[in-house]
Image 1 (cartoon, rainbow, N blue to C red):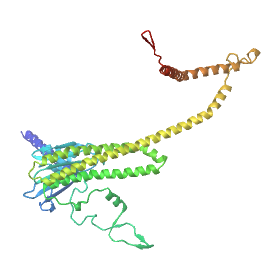
Image 2: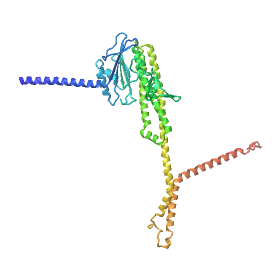
Image 3: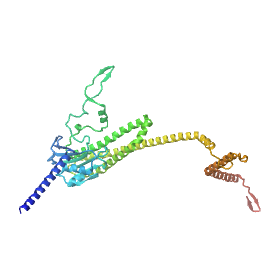
Amino acid sequence: MQQEDRIGGDESDLESSLTSASLRDAHRSRAQFSGMVRQRAYIFDGDGKYYNKEWDLKEGTGKEFCWYHVELPKGNQKLSQSAQHLIDVLCPPLKLQDILSLVSNGPFCGHVDGALVFRVNSPGPASSSFTFKIAARITEHSVITVSLGRVPRLGFSPMGQSLLSEVPSVDSPSYYRGEQKERSGIVIEEHVLEFLLTMNHSEEADNPVPSSVSNLVVHIIDTHVDQLQDVVTKLEIELDAVELEMDRGGFAMKKQMLDDRRFPKLHLNLQRLLQVIAHGEQVFPRVKEKCSTKPWFHAEDINSLEELIGRLRRLKENVGFIANRVTAIQAGLDSWRTEQINRKLYYLSFLSIIFLPLSIITGVFGMNVGGVPWTGQNKPELADGFRNVMYICLIMLVVVLSCFGFPALYSRIASWWRMRAMNRSWSLRRSFQKRPTIVQERRGYLRL
């Protein structure tokens, strides 16, 4: 009995130790996942002010509403790992169906567990610059969003910290009439200016604070469209620079572009971008349709969604133009490569023309004709044997050339014969038309 009690106690201790170990592992993995994602939480009072809040996933009350944003890391990770990240930071109170509706690939818009959920997630690799993911779960007093990487201008910053509101100054002093003159203001370096030129929007500090959930939804979709526009603008600038380099560059630069497959890769990235824009064209009109039935979604925000949908369609046309430019540049490079190959073949054929007579002479006079008939050196009657061999070679050459040239010669003779027959028939017809008609009346008959 004591041994059985001891065994039972050991089993209970083992179960408790396994349970505690599993809990420690779950806690360790939860802590590990929570450190890989970025979280931001805001609460809005509905009067144009916002405050940072703790991550409790609670909804607002009255005029207040909350916004919780999760930023997934861009890296070589699987879709299941992204789902584990969201489970770690959003469960509870969200359920598994909410997580799957936010993290899955492809376009989606519908109601899940009483909340409006939409996503525009491209299925490309997470580490690519042309893979975009934006998803949102919307209720009357809270919004939960998920994005892949940082979305420019998505968050909010205190006023007065915007770089665009400062007086800029160049990073080197200017010279005016030979005298050095220092400029006051914020120093802007060249790479910062290049980055700002690719932006089609303001900074986070210049974002208007939303006063309702509908304003926040419009702001989220607006930033997504701005991000796509930034990528398109960057592609246009890069393509202009490449065209300028091709005009100035030479053989080595063009060969390097062909070896690197630069433009086929760029065309593939453009197709991925077009896929993201097409997903937005499918989802955002449905979001507008479903939000128009909500009493808390304002009418002016419906009009703003319509404008964003129009921007997305114009952006799709612009990407199509860029894809046509890339195709034209690739076609130009292919024609240049064909021209280079043809030029090398021309040089090779020119060299072959130069050495062809030499090869014929060395081949003819270097033949060993000791065993060929009519080439006996000691018989006077066969003194012309070498000449006879040359005659035989010439006859064989004529036969071979006639075999190759007979089809062309036959087609020329046939066409000449047809033209001759047509000219003869035409001349006969003209002579018959010019013959006068003689009408003579004899004994009641008309003679022609």
